[in-house]
Amino acid sequence: MKLLFKIFCLLTFVCSLAKAQDTIQSKNTDAILYQPSKNIKGLVVGLGGSEGGNAWASKHWKTVRDQFLDKGYAFLALAYFGSKNSPKLLEKIEIQDVYNAINLSKQKVHTEKVAVIGGSRGADLALLLGSYYPDISCIIGLSASHAVFPGNTDHFSTSSWTFGGKELPFVPVNEAAVPFMMERKIRKAFEAMLQDKESEQKSFIKVEQIKAPILLMSGTEDEICPSSEMSEKIILRLKNNHFKYRYEHLPFKGSHSEPYQHFDKVFEFLQKNF
Image (cartoon, rainbow, N blue to C red; front, side, top):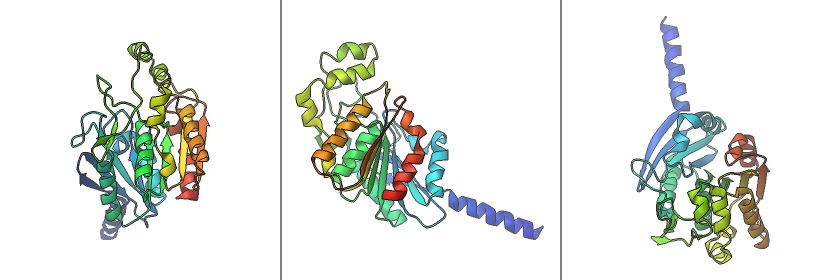
């Protein structure tokens, strides 16, 4: 019986190591750091989209999260709005605050390798982080935008993002977009906003400044935004600027959430490029 008890205790200890997690306390964010039981290959940061809160820490994403851990990656589930200690709305989110939480986590797991994976608005944030911080090692954007859009407020008159306290230029909601927004035809509203070519140009995410490989995945029948078309605009911008790192766009037939069905492609990209 004593031997069985010792074996049980050992197994419990090993399982607890495999699921070790820490709360990362940093300004305007809520984050949970999960650590694998084996040697850490690097840190993967998960950023949710306009749903808010800490999506990657939810039970829904546990299976995928555990896959990252099983492959030797530490995983940081990070909330940048809509959680206890983060801003209430997706509006004027300070990019530096998000980076600071990532940097603290890097120090905790003793790695310099950081991959950021984001979905929807989280994909935009992943690209922005890479454009400002050269120590981001890999970026994966699921249903990403090529430009900055307004914050999710009632008035839509402020940017989603700030850097150094200054709002980033954004594509405004124009008159053409209003009827579609009232009818909840969100993709049509995005397409109408993007008719403003001058604002679009000013609001481009400067992906050419990224110092890391980039994987983009999108659904060709995206009902939320023209993510496939916007991803292609990112690819064109990288080509035109002779981007020297690996970059790829994988379009899949399906909706805004279709890229989440293809994490095998994410793991394959990380294996080769991270």
